[in-house]
Length: 178
Image (tube, rainbow, N blue to C red; front, side, top):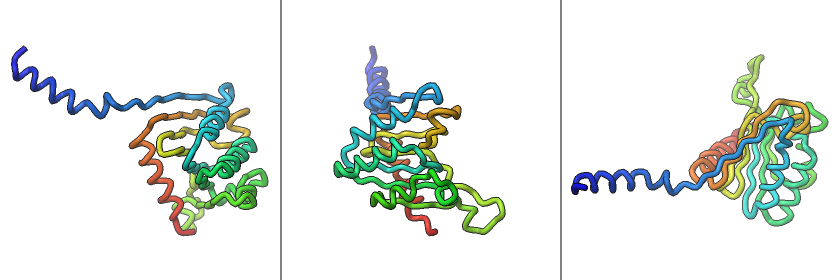
């Protein structure tokens, strides 16, 4: 092999190194047959430092209790839910989180601030755990998402930069003026 070929191969390896070193694992779950909450519960139980959750609707008792247990273990837990859903739905976990002293923000969609008739929703559905795990997809953290709805949930482990992007969005939502 010529020096030029070796140099080109070395440059390619250097350029691809971040991709080759990335050990991100992706897993998909589909409900109702997949009971996606079990995947979320497993990861919440292993959380050590930080758990950030932004979901439109949160009514799942098991997931809510798991967040409380994580907080009791010393994990920093913060939750964002849609304001209108939380205030209108008696099964929403907003009041439960308030009572359990879980930091919670009720966020309206961007258009809601303009008082337009068709106000937008805070329709995010994601979680970031320990700056390395990301959950996202159509899956709300509800009993219906597990048992009735056709939903999807993606789990990214060792997500590095992706987790940082989701954290950034989380804190933009967290700081949104209400």
